[in-house]
Length: 442
Ligand code: ATP
Ligand code: MG
View 1 (cartoon, protein in one colour):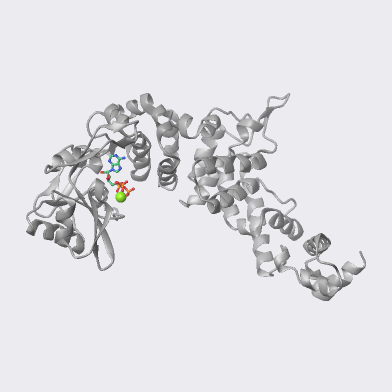
View 2: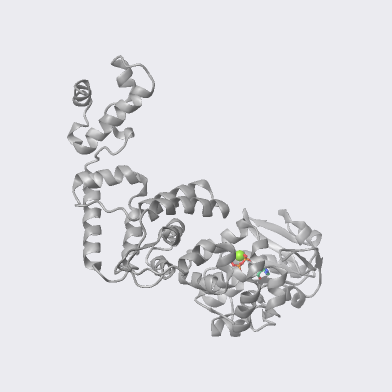
């Protein structure tokens, strides 16, 4: 088998060779090329020390000199070139104490996490595949390089990475690798929220978000996402559902496009059900108030995982709105929903609601989908007519009221709010003179 290296990658490898060093493409780019996936970036590994790399190329950046990484710039495109290295003893399941450069490629490949990520390639040597990464690609297996317990003991994040790669590639975890995660999952508490967030998002937006089940089954969720474990343990005795809150959540993940905000919303849309559950005298479970409480919990979880404010706001708003059902579906009721939920939640909210329905039992499914289609149709009518749904679109502004002699202050706010409520009931009233006239008679 051969890999077509991009021209610039071949150029870097050849230049290093001409200067008397070894150099290979390595890691994710080799794995993805074999799989026919487009590599995200091309990493190069070399026997040359960082100062020797810098001597070969005109433009370089010291990206991580202490770890042996120099970025080579070719026409403003950057390529990370890293010296063969051995990671020293690991401290507290996170960081190697020190790194040692080596002249041996096999030593460098040994420090990598999984066999499929531990292959190197160049045009002269072909594949350097000491741990049968090609075989594991063929078998569809995520397997640690060396002893899994040792490797997860060195860096606990690798346990979550294992499941993330399984989800991205549609692979399964090797038995020993899985067993080691079951034993060492607790070590994940030592890993920073930022690193966990990055792996969790990659897992969620992958083609197999249902792999989140492995995060629960291996005990990792108890450490990084106990709220999800609680969902997996919460039954739903209710005709609308089949299976636990967690299993419904997993099914719903598969029903939305692989978008970060949508997948996070599905993961958390029912997060408050375990705390809101009440079983009635007929043995039926109810979850009153779970969207509101869920939005609150979602905010706490996403902040804990160090997500940015924009993402937190979007996901919270969708969780809060996910169960919203204007009934009957009149223009007035849909306008009120849009006002309550915020126009910005649309049309993403429809994708969320649809996924939620499709992940429920098939009881009344036709009716639920029909209702959603009506809701969506009326929403489009309202958008088309450009009806006013917020103060921003109101035909009267605060300065209009001041010009009418009102004193600036809270009074103006409540006057505008009253006019907005009137306009939500009667859109034709969104006209300056008519509104001011209406207000004078209040
Ligand atoms: P992608 O970039 O598509 O997420 P990748 O395999 O390139 O996947 P990176 O995190 O970019 O993953 O890391 C590049 C390479 O570095 C990996 O292929 C692997 O060989 C090695 N590596 C990365 N993180 C670790 C780790 N925590 N432990 C051991 N090796 C690692
Ligand atoms: Mg990469």
